[in-house]
Every structure is written in structure tokens, then in C-alpha cells.
Amino acid sequence: MIFSLIFVFYLCSFYLSRMFKKELNINFVDYLNELRIKKAKELLMDVKYKTYEVAEAVGISDAHYFSRLFKKYVGMTPTEYKDGQKSG
Image 1 (spheres, rainbow, N blue to C red):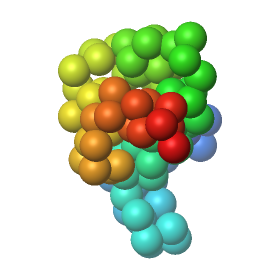
Image 2 (cartoon, rainbow, N blue to C red):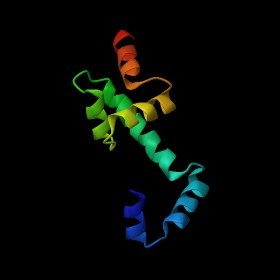
Image 3 (cartoon, rainbow, N blue to C red):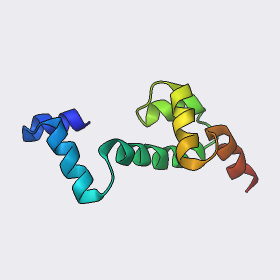
Image 4 (cartoon, one colour):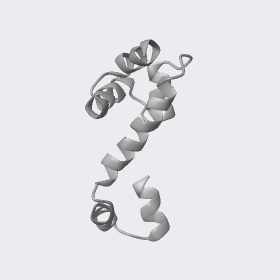
């Protein structure tokens, strides 16, 4: 995604990342991951989606990496989150 922005605005990646961090006080990768996790939480509420499908839907092709990332941001695995939503 950042490379698309670089192409459109003809900026170097270092400069764009630095501007992003300066303006939003968060680096681009963390911002992107937060958006992905937010969308994943919405999708996990729907029982028809499996974890690997949610991972792919938010742009992460490796379901194991997605689970680790999800746990880092949410404090529980996608399965634990999904089970908690069912019982809650």
C-alpha cells in the first residue's frame, strides 16, 4: 500500500513514512495493522468465516502470522475472540 502512495505522489518511502509518523504519531505499518485488526474483529463476529478466510479478507495470506498479529493487538487469538463473542 505504501508503495502505491509512493508511486502516485512520487515520494521516497523513507520520506513518506517519516511524514506519516510525524503527522499521525504512529508508523504506517502499525496504522495498517490496526485497520486490519479492526476489520478482522468485525468479520470474526460472523460465524460463517473461518480464521484463514478473515486473514485473507484483511490482506494477510498467512493465517499463522495473522493469528500472532491478532494476539499482539487484541490480547487473544482470533479463535478465543470469536468464542468470547459467541458466549458474550
